[in-house]
Amino acid sequence: MVVVVKNDIDKAQQEHLVEWLRSMNIDVHETVGEFETILGLIGDTSHVDIDLINSLDIVEKVTRISEPFKNANRKFHPDDTVVDIGGFKIGGGNFQYIAGPCSVESPEQICSIARETKEAGAMLLRGGAFKPRTSPYAFQGMRAEGLKLLEKANAETGMPIVTEIMDISHLELFENVDVIQVGARNMQNFELLKELGHTDKPILLKRGLSSTMEELLMSAEYIMAGGNEKVILCERGIRTFEKYTRNTMDVSAIALLKEKSHLPVIADPSHAAGLSRLVRPLALSAVAAGADGLMIEVHNDPAHALCDGPQALTPSQFAQVVKEAEVIRKVLHGNNED
Ligand code: PEP
Ligand code: MN
Image (cartoon, rainbow, N blue to C red):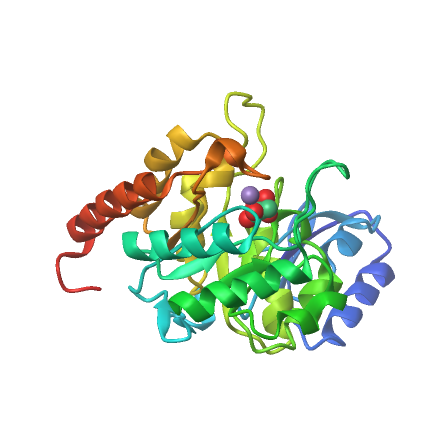
């Protein structure tokens, strides 16, 4: 971190600042110029409040040189993290397809979608039991009963289950869930993230609707700082000025997050597009950008889905996406990887 201090100031204030920084085990190197003094801060500056320093009258500007996230940073952990979900690995060259409906609706619905997506190549089953809906009058999910139906689908197919948690008070209901999803709307629910940091379950962390990549990595940092290193990042589209799509998929985030972090990065083209016909091209672009997996909403009867029907693929459309994604993966990695 570099702090530029004005020259026409009370030097005692500058000494105060330097002393305070040194008390946090930070080395401070001063360079006095004609018009300003530059303080170079060396050491772990992740605890330093950049806004606080910026607000001081004696300070001209502050620039962070190193990133504020440590555990999630590839600089301190050059090798890819591989998250193991009941034997299904993700990251480090291991790719997974996660498929299923937006919401669990009935035993027949979830079990038939599980069977058909598994047949098409999906390894993990997704399905929302607790749903974050914009309208309080919209279907809110089957809640605890929905989790039970996911367990039933898991027992029938062996597919590990991925489902969203909205409140930490529900955690004990998630005992048999294989991957806990933190949805876009809860990406910055810091108390929830802290608690999930104390569990040993893999966490699928979705990027918030208007969050920067750094904010997503800082949210991963919250989970990891608690001791849980099994975090999977998910790009699911961000809100922009564009109205033709539900969100705008940020393909650059897939490549850049993998550069900045060792954590696996997957893409959810369903929520990015909002339109089923766009799911295929967005899914393929994510694979080409280096994603470690795809999470796609699939419904056996999209026209009658209780949630997110317009973006749902049918099982046969999903099967086609898997086939084409596999072609791209072969082009990228040859035949050596699974
Ligand atoms: C979902 O996966 O169904 C969901 C609600 O996703 P997001 O949090 O990305 O909107
Ligand atoms: Mn959905």
